[in-house]
Every structure is written in C-alpha cells, then in structure tokens.
Length: 129
Image (cartoon, rainbow, N blue to C red; front, side, top):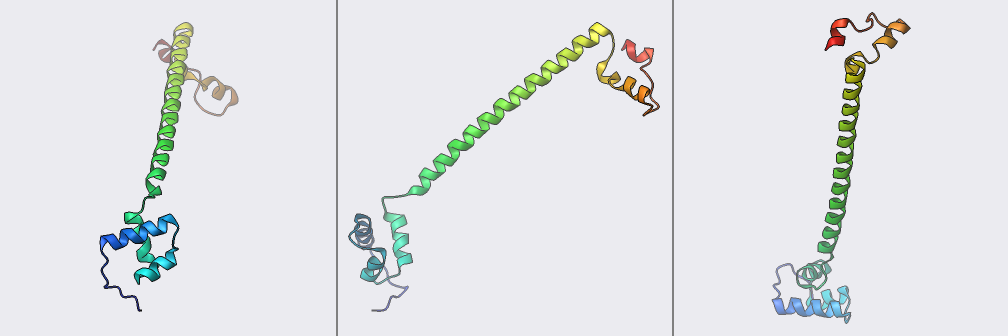
C-alpha cells in the first residue's frame, strides 16, 4: 500500500505506535510500515506523545553553568574594584605624606632626565594643589 500525505491518524493510533516503539516491541521502520506512513512522521509522534524529552534537561544544565560563570565574573569584578580602591587610597596617602600629586607628576622627572620631552619637573604651582 502506498503512503499518502493526506492520511489522518487518530490520537489513539499515534499513542499506540509510540508505546510499542518505546517498549522495544517494534523498530521505527516497522512502526512506519504498520501505520502506512513515513519514519519522519513517526518521529514527530514520538516527540509529541513520547515519554522521553531530553531537550528540557539539557537546557537546565546550560542555565546552571551560565549562572556559575556569572557568579565567577561578579566575584572577579568585586575583587578588581577593591584593588582599585586600595590603590587610590595608597596614592592619596602618599600624596599627603610627600606633598606632591603623584598622578600628575608621575614620570615627569624621568622624561626630563632622558631628554625625551620638553616637560620639566613639576612647578611649585602643581605641587601646592
């Protein structure tokens, strides 16, 4: 008998075929022959009426690993922020102790010594700030 694409199958027939497939009584090819349809259509029935739906389990595993990654990145960001605050505080304390703005004057003496630039040591005006 030829298979036709216009054939309609009742829900009971579909469920019966799927149940036999899942129990191992028949193969996918045998199910298609028995129902006079294609194996592609049988696979669709398996997705719709079958007991096994692995797609959902995979999605949950991916989401868990993404959440772990987000947590790691948040921790790394917090650590970097803490290091930045600590560095700024050290620079601030050094500025007060040596009465110089290290952020503005850092490297100017080295440039003047190497002759690499026209900028000289910081003026008194910049030191008072």
